[in-house]
Length: 373
Ligand SMILES: Cc1cc2nc3c(=O)[nH]c(=O)nc-3n(C[C@H](O)[C@H](O)[C@H](O)COP(=O)(O)OP(=O)(O)OC[C@H]3O[C@@H](n4cnc5c(N)ncnc54)[C@H](O)[C@@H]3O)c2cc1C
Image 1: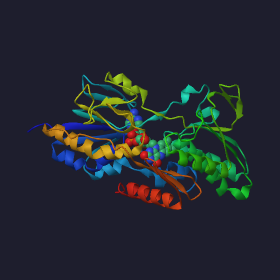
Image 2: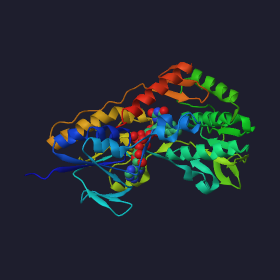
Image 3: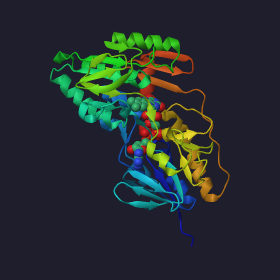
Image 4: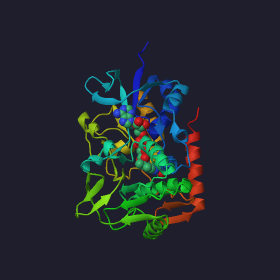
């Protein structure tokens, strides 16, 4: 009898959730499947709604253990720290090791907050990833607002995420309006426009909307240091801030660069999602760099890569030809502005209103419910 091959999935990101839910297809091809993650999957589509108080934390989470066990696979709770590719073995932070024949990474991304000196949890700096940070931020700010405090809050980074975060902190303060709490919310943008990836008209409407929500935007300002309850800027400006939310963009986990595989802010994979250097290693989502493409870091790409990854793991086990992934050129993105409206964009088309938010809630609910087992 042949020994079953071992497929090890590192990180329960969007694509691996799909593969985990279809683990029976991999088992039918003669392999054991193991998913390793540090705990729950936090769905970023609902993260700002959770921060603003619309959703409870448990409504923003999926249990990856339940998903893979329902399909006959195994879950290991832990953090992968390194990989010995010569031995085909992964090492976890708690000392466990797991051997693999086929390895796939879907470990997401982080925020490079260390580029701002003195920016730590102890100085009340909150990177927007991991998403669990935003749940803790909701609790901390909610308690302060409920106690009638009016902290000064600075959001660094005026991209889509920073705008959504600022709008939903304003929403959280409104939920506690009876307490007279009137926090100062400042959005600090290094550029001269907000959300540069959006169409110009949508950028202008977004800037007006944030101003109407009481958010003060500062443009062309680069924060360099957190010191004595303030933010120091390159132009000498000092900004008082009790809490700092760091939304300066997402980077692939740097430890993946130690795998001795092509790495360019992500493991470099070809259009089969396989490392260009090691045919036994796959990578998807924010931690992958698809050769020849410069994809935005969005969950929607991981969702589209998922069926291709599943097909290619099964094909690898059977020694069959692999399927090609082609990234979509346009995608729907909807920002939750915390006041019952959403800003939807797809290519150059955009719509700001209640129907956009209704659509976002419907899509997000459909995604989360598809993994309830
Ligand atoms: C506030 C906010 C809002 C966003 N809103 C949207 C949105 O509305 N739509 C959208 O498309 N994108 C959105 N994004 C972007 C989105 O979060 C990312 O692009 C997306 O999460 C990437 O998905 P992924 O599948 O690559 O990884 P993730 O969803 O980040 O999952 C990675 C998983 O890997 C696990 N992991 C990490 N390291 C290890 C390790 N060493 N060992 C084991 N497990 C590990 C983590 O625990 C996590 O479960 C938002 C981002 C932020 C910060």
